[in-house]
Image (cartoon, rainbow over all chains, first blue to last red; front, side, top):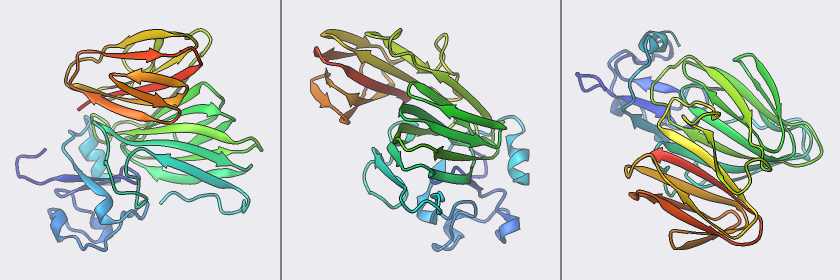
Length: 72
Length: 227
């Protein structure tokens, strides 16, 4: 949904988000890391669903949702 | 994955999924904004899913039989019986636990839907479908209609319990919307297809659709979604 072409992926096991813009610094993934550059054996940090169980979503953030996403 | 209660060896969960769920099948990934439509039975006291996290997803449960104990980190402990249903919007994050604490089987339909916004404030709402009062008409359970539980997505869930021969017309919000019809019980002919217990059909691109019921009890769930 962003102008820079960065995308967001949602875990279909639990709804966890991977936003390329934010990365997951607390899990060792730097902001700006593309989904394609995440290893295939990576799993959802919340529920263990494999990377293949994520789906790209084009859903806007709620008001203040992006800020919340940075802190989750 | 969802942790199934470990300390009840005689308990088990049966799940029939209409769409892909985890590694269990490879078919249709969903329908419109719907991602999960699961017909689940928790057998054995203590059976269920222990506390586990979610984000974003809109998760609904429609209890058909038995008693479902639902706990969530939105601060709710709820017990739902046949006709009761809930909608949990997990938004920026929450956890829940789904349990059958009794000997009788608990059967519920679980529906997962994508939200229209990411990281919403988590919320929980519950309501009741009165099969007697709602008999022989299509009742909206979730959506924008009066008395329905509001949902942050362009979806609508309805139910029809019919005990007579009848012709029911369902009108989607637009021709851009699709309707997933699941027969809980009975027999119905929807747009040329006869559905019996646990059959289902997705219909889209129509201004309205008709359901012809027979004389026996027929119980249908309609999940309408923007496509």
